[in-house]
Image (cartoon, rainbow over all chains, first blue to last red; front, side, top):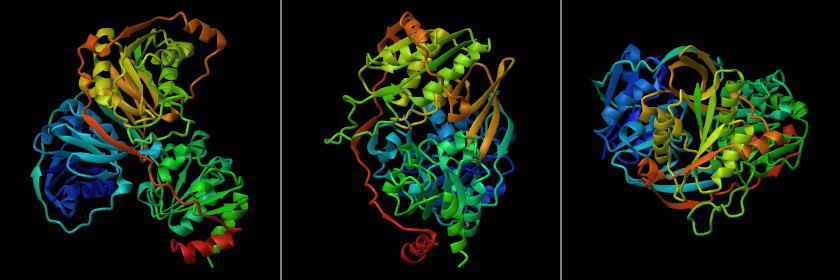
Length: 310
Length: 249
């Protein structure tokens, strides 16, 4: 058995999701290689080579791979995959975009969002917004897997892998990059944050999110939101936590003015400690909260922020 | 321009699902079924393109049991022109769905395929990407905005860090995210008109596609539930609990 892990990175930094994915792969053994495809990303390959458990790093470096377009990435992954029993990628928008296209090229049924690796062919994955867990066995010759990163710890650094030149192909001509508008924030990324403060429809408008930002800054937390808050235009799409947004599992999740639709709970119910602040005492969020405060968030949140100074 | 959309019949998003006692799957008897919400967004987008004069014909596809025809009628009532129903009682995995869609694309020759990014039952998020790979077309996944410029489409995508815009050569496959549009409700006259639109019924064998599953579901279980916690009176008490009891701040 040997596995290939597809690294997620921005050409500037290796994303933490790569480390969680390596841990999932290591359950099956330590014969793991890492593919880093990008442009001018030699430093990323050096960093990837230090991840514990990685034997070889494939470095595919070229302009065709700068934006990691699925049309260019899938063919090189499919080429490499014939040498491996398993290919793992994080179930982020990066992995979700690329891996099914690889599956098409290999005629394999990919397994999405794996939360447990039971054996070389058996995996557990959530279905119905995490309201059921399915254990599935794959009969395909190569197992293609995307990993729910919150279910696996980050791999440690301390390895010393060899680097080799990875496969390279011509640009597909099917697609190209136009622009990227990334949210700029000094706060940690949602999927990597230890503490998250999230707001819902109860926030009433985008300006009121300043209350949550003040609390988040005290806690070193990321700021998230429910779908209702994103749809209402309070905050950008990348804040969304839920079934179809980001899946998070921080040490502490503070849900403010969020009623707790099952689609939202799907994205945060594996958090270690959940706090709910809501004026509606019947809000479903209280059913999964460890600590609930029934009250006016515009009073409770500033008070909590002030308490943290004590 | 001709557009193909696919619509899946799923358990309604408001229903609290129940795992079957024998662990074989999810109870679907006597449960309200609806069109997958992301597919509603796909249909809505094609209708807006037609209203803008960019699309001439909308072909809707659904796969599964006989009742999928109800889902197609919903698509018609919203504005789709005609339908193809691939009748099967077997469970279709994303790879099989995309192979059937490829066969339909080869017959229909659309300029664009728009699919929901994920079905809210199996949560796989695969079909559009597989279909694009099988056809050798470009893919614009998790789309929140489409701009057609000549024989290209610019797709704004919802990615983890924010938004990303790509161009795709047509024909191409798009998958819809939540912010692409807000689907309309069908009007009564349109619901009546939908009854007259035609559905061609096919079977997987008609397309020569092998739909046998690659995955075997060994069991389906209810996840462990969280114990209900406690209510505290105010922020001061909450801070104490988080500091001294939970140790998270």
